[in-house]
Image 1 (cartoon, helix red, strand yellow):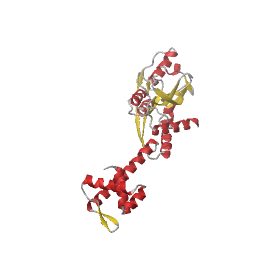
Image 2 (cartoon, one colour):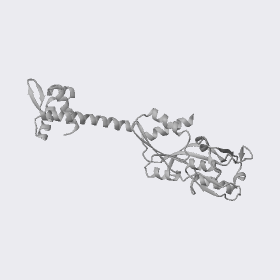
Image 3 (cartoon, helix red, strand yellow):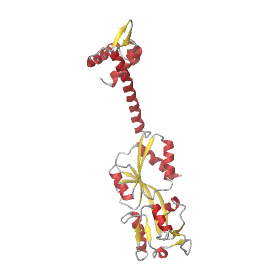
Image 4 (cartoon, one colour):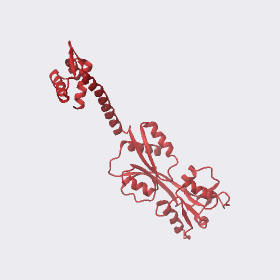
Length: 293
C-alpha cells in the first residue's frame, strides 16, 4: 500500500459508494475499484460489505480506516512542516557566540523569535578560533567572532568596531579620564583572551608598537571572574567596550584608552559556497536590518 491508496480508501469510506468517491477524487470509477481490489488482495481481507446501494466497513476495514486517518494526517503535517522548514518557519538556529558577544544580541534574538515563533535555538559559547572550526565542521551554521582571524573560507557580516578600556579597582587613583599604554604598562594585567587568539594579539601588539616592555600578562576567559579579580585590586585589565556595557555593579574604574589605533571588531560568519538554511538566512537578514538602523 501507499499513501495514495489510503486516501482513495478514506474517500470510499466517507462517500459510501465507489462512484461518489470517484467523483470526489476526480477519477473514473473503474481505476478506483481496481485500487480497492488491489488493497484487499494485498492484505488478503475484505474491506467492505454492501448494504443496499452503499458500502459498510468490515471489522478489518474499520481497523484500516482508523490507521489510514492517522497516517494521512501525519503525512500532511510532515509535508507542511517540511515546507515551513524550507521557508525558515520551523527548525533550529545554530549560533556560536564569543565570550565577548555584542551586548544587544539578546534583543536581536528576541526580535527574531517574535518574527519566527516556531524556531528553536542552539546557542553555543566558545572562543573565536573554536567557533570558526565548529562552523567549518557544520556543527554550527553561524557564529559571532572577534577579529583578527584567518577567515578566507567564510562570508562575513561586520557587526561592530569598538574602543578598548583600561579597568582597575576603584581603590586605584588614576591621573585622568583617559589613559595611554604608557600609563598602564606597569600594571599586572589579566585579559579576556588566550595566547594566539585575536584579542590577545591586538593588546600585545600595542605594547610592542609603543616600544614598551611586555607586561606581566595573565589570561581569563571567564568575564565574571576576571572582573572580580580586577575589583579586588589583584589585577587590572584591558577589555573591549562591550564588557563595560554588559557587566555592571562592580566597583571598578573604567577609562578609555586614548591610543586611537586600538579597537576591537566583531562579525557574524558563515561558510562560503555551502548550503545555508532559510532559518540562518532570516537571522542574517534581521541583523543587516538592525545594522542599517
